[in-house]
Image (cartoon, rainbow, N blue to C red; front, side, top):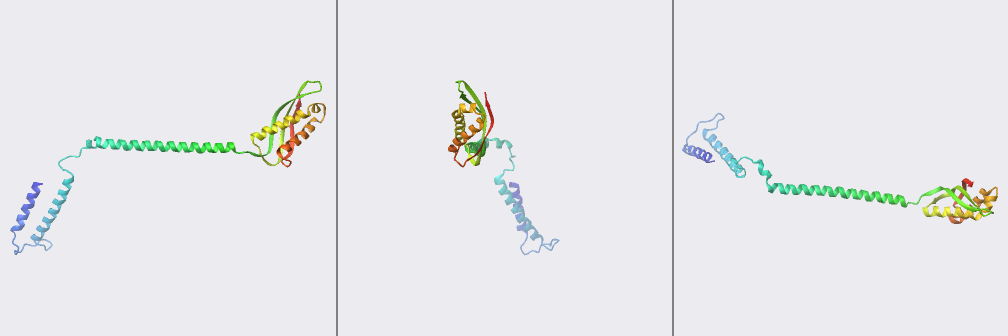
Length: 215
């Protein structure tokens, strides 16, 4: 830097030695040597000024040290930032999974609580004990299908009530069912009356006894 300043001073002294009224030889473009020296001196000064500004921020005599990036002043904040980003990502994924699980549980609950609307219902595997005239027990095994006039909401409680009605209707007829040749039709008529009292007169369309066996 000192050498540059010294060269600059020498150029200024050379310019001072040229008389102001002396005519300087012209350059190739018609400019005098004085004009060229002045312009060269100005560009040199601007260059020196820019170099001085740069040197104020970066020392040219000191090489860049990559190890300086490994300083704890840099590593600690960087590690904290990475840890915060990772924690935020994990928390976000956990919340998303929790929300999706809640939505799935709500859908399952809604489907489970939804009451099915049917026009036909099947009630299998009845085994009804009936005492005959001699006091011996016979067992009536049957399957029953109900057909409705329109869609009926068939809850689990309503299914249990229908099964009880069918069971009691068979026990009510008892010995009559064992002796009569048309016991199936008689049981069907008894079930119709009791089921219409339970479901409503217009609800039940027909009853089908698909299996009817005494053992």
